[in-house]
Structure formats: C-alpha cells, structure tokens
Image 1: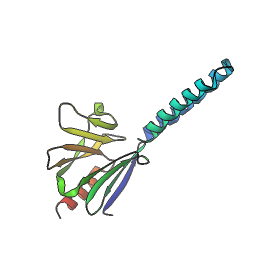
Image 2: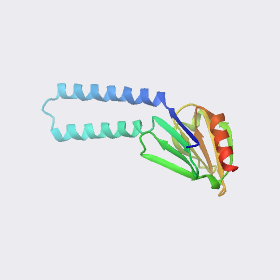
Image 3: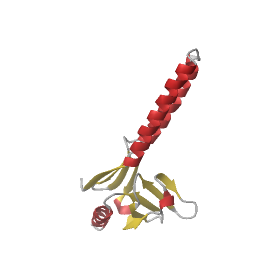
Image 4: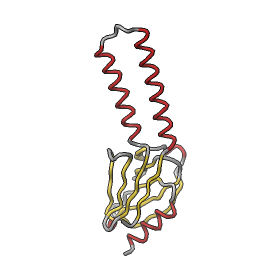
Length: 154
C-alpha cells in the first residue's frame, strides 16, 4: 500500500444522527396519537426512514487508497467505489472547491468534471488521458497530490 487515508465527514454524521432523532420522535408521537394505525403503514414509514439513514450514512467518510496499479476511492462502508488506473492519470493538483459544489458525488453539466467529497473544500484534481476530470475531496491535499504524482511518474 503506497497511500491510504480516510476523511471523516463529521457534518454528515451530525446530520444523520439529527435525522435519526427527528424520525424516532415522529414515529413515537405518531404511535401515541394513533395507536390503531395499520402495521403496514408503520412498516412503510420505518422502511423509508431506514433507507434515508442508510444512504446518508454511506457518505460519512471517503477513503482514498493508492496501490501498485490503482487509485481507489470508497465512500463509507463501500456502497460506492471507484478506481482509476494510475497509468491513465496524466496530472494531479491541489484545488479548492467552491461552496456550491456541495458534498457527495457531483457531476457538472458545463464541464467534464465529477466531484467526490464528504467534507470541506480541499480536493485534488486528477485528469485522465481521456480528458475526464475528477476531484477527490481530502483533508490532506498536499500529501495526496504528492502520492499521486510520485506514482504516475514511475
């Protein structure tokens, strides 16, 4: 393993926990006010809440790994993964994302860029031989940039 780092998205964790509290409170109040509500309805509401929490929790961290052949990224517990052949990467540079780029996985309609981010505005932008541009959010942009550059210039 040549590089491995996990960035934690603390804001996403707080939002997920806050939503869990809101959902639990709403469920408790709904059952107290209408105890005779159909159990199928309760199951559907609970299933939707669990799905929302599952999706949110999958974006609570972003792991970047560089090995002998690939630069790999993985959100949370691995529901979304992507890998890039190191031999396909032509450049890497530290950049700052704009606040409106947001967090998560974002595609841009006006440029050929995809952003992967869980927190903050620091990122490393990589360009592939195909011309596609990716931004990988990180809380250690200089280390990640250096690791990529060292491994694509072997």
